[in-house]
Amino acid sequence: MVVHEGRVAGVWEFTEESVAVTLFAERGEVPRAGLEAEAAHPARRTGRERPLMVRTS
Image 1 (cartoon, rainbow, N blue to C red):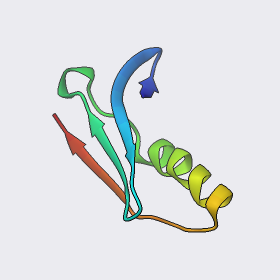
Image 2 (cartoon, rainbow, N blue to C red; image 1 turned 45 degrees about the horizontal axis):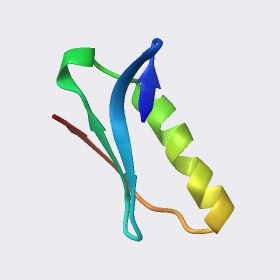
Image 3 (cartoon, rainbow, N blue to C red; image 1 turned 90 degrees about the vertical axis):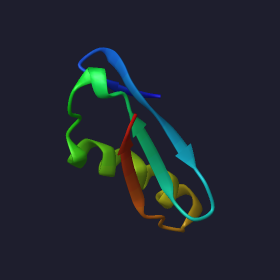
């Protein structure tokens, strides 16, 4: 789950091809830099980078 300003703001999905984030529209914007930093963690563990895809529901 994506937490921003103390509230759940979305969900993550990690696949072989990408790291996808679905943000909840009612929670407002989440800084992309923070999402990119979090998406980089699996790449460091697996040695494989995946593109970040951000969508809003």
